[in-house]
Image (tube, rainbow, N blue to C red; front, side, top):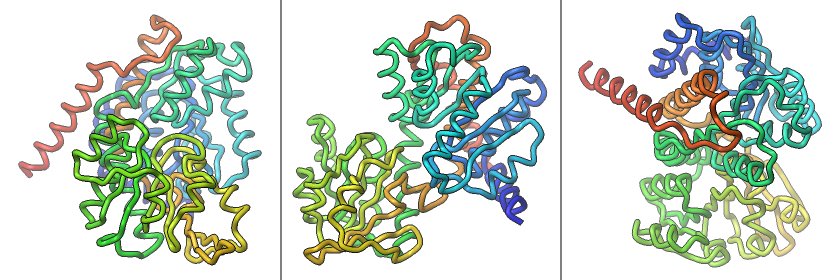
Length: 394
């Protein structure tokens, strides 16, 4: 039953991903990825499955693991595992030991291309030495957090292959990070809490492209939006967009909803939690579940209960109740279905073209982080415009 449900979810996504359909047809006929072993470390849900099937159609052998234990959808994993040439090692809620074991399976697969979200594979390869990169042509990294980790590896002299910063594509950070994160995070929060957003005070922690999207959608839902941002230029931008710029502690004391989007560990730390308003709902929209210091909150809490699916209440000694959505993990996937299908159609088309680019050009590229090729960015934009024109003309 689970596999059938997974197949239906994948089919729904495919029906709304015209760019992937176009690329899938071309990849299927030309087989540009023939002979490649692609290691995938992404959020394993239906839209990701469509990307994996597109890469597989191009002739690649695939081994996939999850980039976050709480974003994996087991029914989708089951459906993918039925496809010859695709191996998946992941399950929802897997332990950290299991996650590390799955990363080890990916390393042992000796991929020629790595497609990932967060940089875990690149860091693991660096930790295991240059020999682990033998045969690896390059890495395609999708997220702001992952690109930052790759840049750190490059600076330390531990990046031995070219890496394409897919997140640097304008069609990625302008669309996915802003419109995708904005819509999907609020969908997940509203579904998890069943609370009204209109009239509430919302604190957005971080005003990068994800924070911009979160603030935009919160305002559209009728919230009063506060922004905490340490970069003065971004803070001024938030102010000019009409949001109230506050210090973190000041915002915590007023906010009904707090959403982090910084990519920084412990940005909402123990001191900030001490100032949080009673009844506040806290969520994280960054890739890793470390932006809210849950160990500090756990140490302060007298009791922790699951009050709704994907919502836990932490009761503090002074009687305040703080609610954590999605276990503090990436909320749009831990408590929801992730970005809208059409957004991931764009992002995964950028990924698929980056893989094809590395297969053809990777041997010529120096081992460093490379900006996304502008011509591919433009190609995806033109594909989107084509599909929009077809839709508008019926």
